Length: 255
Image 1: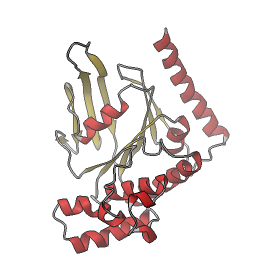
Image 2 (image 1 turned 135 degrees about the vertical axis):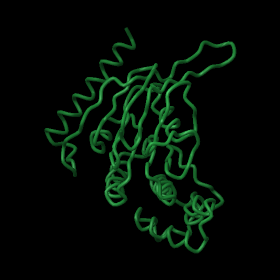
Image 3 (image 1 turned 60 degrees about the vertical axis):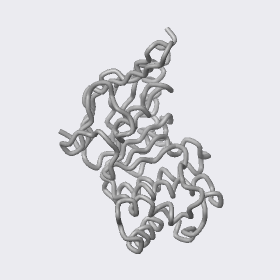
């Protein structure tokens, strides 16, 4: 029994006058408390769909998600989600974006603002607390999105390719910062990515998924100590092994 139990999840998408699409096929996985798990696989393999089901934003056709022994059916504050799109409110400044969730939960505005200052410091944006999203770079906006998710004090942070739209230098910097936040907050992170390098750098375990319908092809335990050096022989060896798995999956899909 883990922190998050993914039990036999199957998801089928149906449209009128079109064949059914089996997106996820009997996916099961236990995620431990405070574990960092990356999901990796071909486009369309159901990674994002699985994350949305864990968030309570989508419903499986069969199977269930269990968090701390309780079945998930709707979103709640125990699970925070960070999307690839920044999804900030453009009419709210940085602080107002971060306190939105706590205020919706009934937290007093003064306390919500005090707490927001802690998260702004955590993501290195204290001096931009009064800025609006359009005044920030892409990387800064994504840091605000992370701070907003953390402000709800989630036990599990769900991240759907949060750095996918960023340049390589910014992406690497935010990966380092995310690991620092994870270490300080002691939360569980489920992270969807297309980047092998990102998965190898971040994860305790890498879940490699098959092409549609999405199944778990292999789970790789990453036993390399942190901080990881991207060019080290050990990292290169692991990266090569993961790339081989993905190459096999692409070949099977073409055949």
